Length: 275
Image (cartoon, rainbow, N blue to C red; front, top):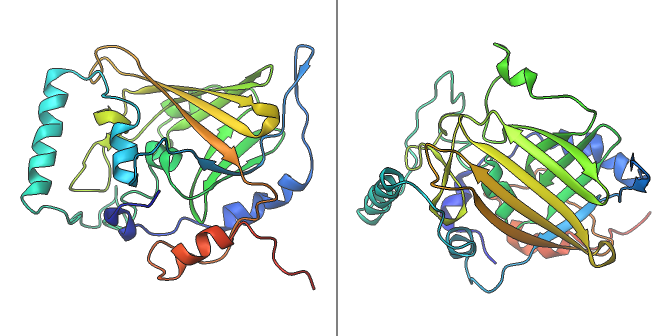
């Protein structure tokens, strides 16, 4: 599937994070919950589109409609009407909350990261798991036993990725995320969107159950979004990701603005020549 046009205005995240943690992927990590070892889910993973045809259709329609409140449905209708009238440019100005202005519009939002058509680069360590999108965006899932108390600190800065902590239940990683930002750096979509017409903000709670299937070849992510100010009931859906055999991520200055990025996208899974 292809990224939609409005994703081309995002800026790259700090690729040093991917480089820093890439060495972790060479060592198999084994953790134990009770008597059951977990599986190392490090590698490159491609989301499996069931046939939507475009990224926009996949994001908006592959999960079925989100069970939203009437005022959220009206909010979405008004947003679509503005786009049909030609309001398709992000006009956010630089500020304390958006230091780069409109640049980070879609580059740091968890729902879009997890739906991206670029491979996800997952690097599993002992105390945390990095999920990055080739070649920008990233999120951390802390598995060292910490709680969400940081979110209540005055030093915590809410983001579109939220604060994620995880625990293993056998071969399933259960991830709990809170602490999302109340709004985005995008004048077109001031509240972060989820698939199916839902929204996510500072009152939203997300649970993900990441199940390893088919002998480690498939990851099934089941997302459950909860927020009584948005949804009439929990919104649940599942994405499947297939592992790219011997995938090698791009870790250079590639961005969606780079004209050659699409051509290199599939080539990036080929092992580079060894000197």
